Image (tube, rainbow, N blue to C red; front, side, top):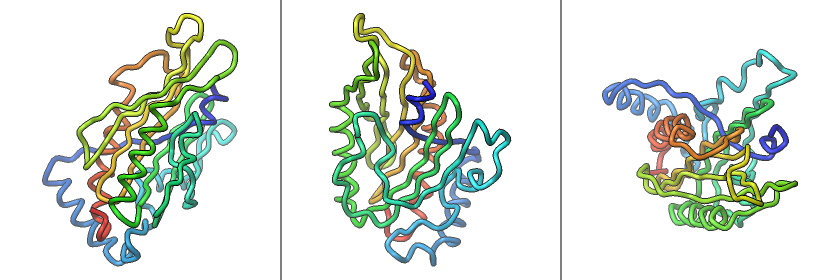
Length: 224
């Protein structure tokens, strides 16, 4: 599973607070980053939910690692080379990943030049995941699909699960993600673990973070 996880994806944790606190926090964030977002939605430092944590030393450096990247890397999704789309029109990309022995988590925010470009990227991602089927070695095959959910302007749950090729039952290993488009931003929270079946609880933490970031990206001028 560690080998499978190392080729996968997402991250998380958010604090609650109520509608009034959320509104206050959003206004404060907008004011703080107003000057930094003038380049059409470029991401300020420490904008992602897990950036601050990712910069701190880990407790077990031999077993766990955080990374932060501003490269225009592929969208946070695999297998089946899902991210190798011609995903054009990006203004800014940031990816925060956490890798341990049996889990790979990633948080990613991508800002596009236009809502149309973001919508195209979301449609392409859904198409690629929907056709995903890849040999994982031995008798295991990974299959992917998306399911629409209500969040932002467009959103899906992403399910990739390993299956036994002979009896088609679930095998150990899979990926769970929540991808949201809000305006001209794509927000992605995904993780790979030793999943042995699909359950609503698999998406709980990703959904919490996606909801928070869907509000936060609108603090960047012109994104929403």
